[in-house]
Image (cartoon, rainbow, N blue to C red; front, side):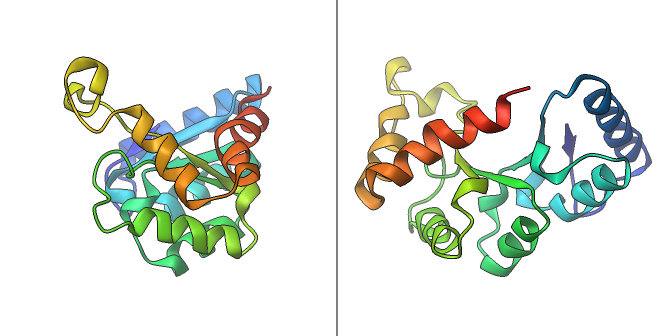
Length: 162
């Protein structure tokens, strides 16, 4: 499910309501697309108003917004966040810094990492760079093995189970 701005338009609102309905019928977890990292608060508000438990939602691309308060406010609702800019556009390490702050704040169980690797230019196997190994190495270089395991295995497994 995707929205393109801070506030969903009428069509996006109907989409969110339909996704909530499907979730309530099936139990399937909800993964959203937050364009430019924004839009999460409005997505959460509508999903929760439709009866979705926040823990069944993961908001993607939120690390495009580097303000820690934005992330804490979202995490305090009970939703999960997926950070995926390490592979794409994190030359200053802002995603790693943000991830560390959220872990130190006690939110580890609500965090996941990914790639947003929609372009072949990002994949070493296809002649691009930096490749998937870069994500794994970057997380391993900055966090201990227990955190690495939570981000890559435990949290996604718990979230995706239904």
